[in-house]
Amino acid sequence: MRRTIEIFGKIDGITILLYLFLVFFGWINLYSSVYNEVYEVASVFDLSTMYGKQLLFIGVSLFIAFVILIIDWRFFDTLSFVFYGITIISLIAVLLFGVEINGAKSWFQIGDWLIQPSEFAKFITALALAKMLSLNKKNLFSFKSIIRSYAIVLIPFILIIWQKDMGTALVFTSFILVFYREGLSGDVLIILLILFSLVFLSLIIEETNLWKFSVFITSIIIIIYYFSSNRVRSIKISSIVAIISNGMIFSTGYLYNNLLAPHQIKRINVFFGNTDDPQGAEWSTHQAEVAIGSGRFFGKGFLNGTQTRLDFVSEPETDYLFCTIGEEWGFLGSFIFLLVFTTLLLRIIFLAEKQKSQFCRVYGYSVACILFIHLMLNISMIIGLAPTVGIPLPFISYGGSSLISFTILIFIFLNLNSYRMEILR
Image 1 (spheres, rainbow, N blue to C red):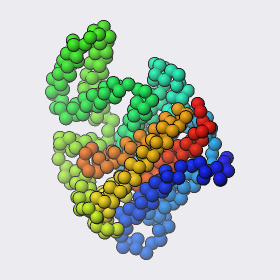
Image 2 (cartoon, rainbow, N blue to C red; image 1 turned 135 degrees about the horizontal axis):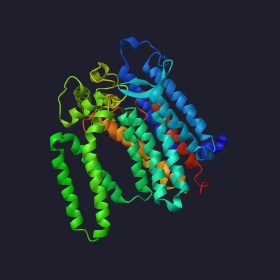
Image 3 (spheres, rainbow, N blue to C red; image 1 turned 30 degrees about the horizontal axis):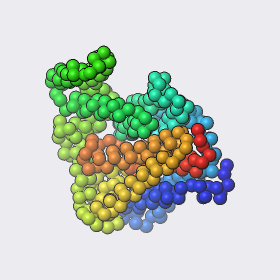
Image 4 (cartoon, rainbow, N blue to C red; image 1 turned 60 degrees about the horizontal axis):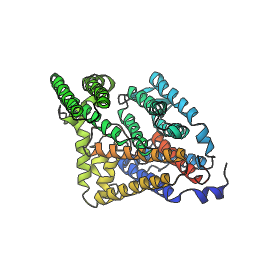
């Protein structure tokens, strides 16, 4: 444990202020999104209301944050693999004993409360990855090190996909950016982008034309090989790329139909224009765009949002809470919110670069990348730039598991940062 004077003397106050602003700004907008005449006389501490429960979650989160700050950093370093093992067991257990909500079997139900293990898997995976890379820093990109590091990310990623929680699973792709910071070749990022493009194209091309697409891609690979300067090395790489590319082209449809929930498939089909569902899958996105657009520059004012409060936008208190920000605070309020969030991300990256320890740096970049992917995916789906997926807006959306896990994620890094002059390995 640490003395109180040490806590306030070494913890980064700017990050805490940004965190507190986002948390309480989120609570204000949650209050507005669910407010109606029934709640007009209800206390803000009334646990029968969403904003009352969220205030409780905020209190619990702040208590947990304080506890994290007074713990010695060695606790997180030493037990990171233990926490990871427990997390993997919980992700398997939720598949067997969890409850299904909106097509995803991702929650344990304890009385009236729901706990989502995949939310906590994010920061625990970040800790385990930081520990693994710090142990192998002399041979960071040896074959064994790469396999172990990728496995740490892929195991929870696959388990969460099996839960049919695609939104949370996509967050784990953020660790690619962490690998890139630690020295992963930019060629790998290009290859991953190409493979992602193949998946995208495989979904919009008719199944009967996939073989033509396969021939086209294979021809391009052969042309690249023909003009390569090193034929011996290129034939191996070209063969592997051709096999993987064709495998993804012909397996995407099967995985798409068997790993995703029916409502997720419908949302993706609507996004790609393969089907129309104006009263179903298209409704939320359309109403979200109307809500944000109606806010204009200055917004309609606090408690004056009609699209969100009158239930035109589905679930405005969770994944679509940014609609309330856009409608009631307008472009100006949305810009300020995004500016504060971006400042938080840049602050975390700035602090991560100052770390003398690879363990702390990797974890810091993991925090920034996880928050960035959450922000990007959430807002992209709301404004129609991405298919609708269930993913909360960090520190803003309603939910105990979400808020507590994000709080733990960021305050572990603040703890490690406060020791940066002492952690040298």
